[in-house]
Amino acid sequence: MDALTEMNVRENVQMCRTQEEREEIREVIRMQNINKSYQMGEQSLHVLKNVSLTVNRGEYLAILGPSGSGKSTLMNIIGCMDVMDEGSYHLDGVEIGHAKEKELAGIRNQKIGFIFQKYHLIPTYNVLQNIVMPLLMRGMGLKEAEEASMNVIELLGLKERIRHKPNELSGGQQQRVAIARALVGQPTILLADEPTGALDGNSGKEVLKLFANLNDMGNTIVMITHDSNVAKHAGRAMRIVDGEIVENSI
Ligand SMILES: Nc1ncnc2c1ncn2[C@@H]1O[C@H](COP(=O)(O)OP(=O)(O)OP(=O)(O)O)[C@@H](O)[C@H]1O
Ligand SMILES: [Mg+2]
Image 1: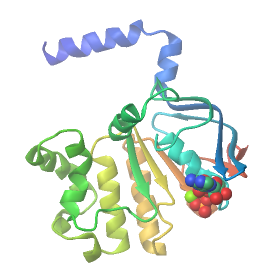
Image 2 (image 1 turned 90 degrees about the vertical axis):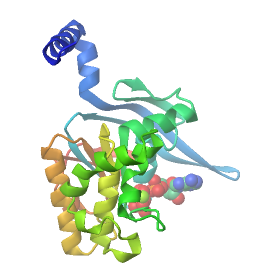
Image 3 (image 1 turned 45 degrees about the horizontal axis):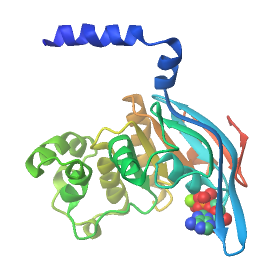
Image 4 (image 1 turned 120 degrees about the vertical axis):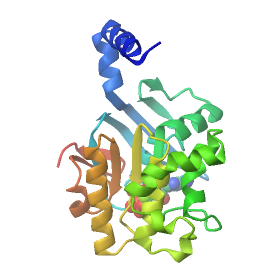
């Protein structure tokens, strides 16, 4: 099939979808009444209370809240690293609630790019080896994965550093490696948990500028922070307090 015919077929498929189906696909995240508790001995700690959240493709959302409010718990559920007790969660139109661990691992690898406060790079691997990791996990060969990584390596300004180990880099550079690793598989959504929390002011600003550029390029981003100045950089912000969404736009 030539490219033009393929495009026509794709367009027709799009047109055949019902309004509802198109809406659902526009929504990268659709959570309704999520509840999550942790069992601590005899006691149950109710961490997320009827959380509902929708994120559209191309949005940049900040989730703002104090320490212990449930931000990371929510992020772990969004990122399919943990499961909810109750509620419904659709990620890119797929119901996550009933997925098994093996399916969740596949969804994480294909759809989610994670960025953490403390980078979580593999210390014995160099920059390039860290960045190609998600592609190797998909079964791509090393050479192909390295070639496929070159665009993000250039985008993140890491070309001169690919043979460095994480401990030979500054915090800001390590976070850029983590961002490159999150981006390399072209995930549906980027999830960042306090991405500037471990960085000095200037490196933090650089990361926020980078996020704004990535969002301009069409990437969907959800960022967690306890800092309202950081949240201001997102297109939309919501506040979570004691496991409840208290303000949907700040
Ligand atoms: N695995 C766990 N087992 C038991 N309790 C947990 C677990 N993970 C988190 N909690 C508790 O759930 C609550 C919410 O934790 P969470 O990590 O989501 O908060 P947070 O908003 O990310 O905080 P911070 O800003 O400090 O990172 C806290 O009271 C925490 O102690
Ligand atoms: Mg946290």
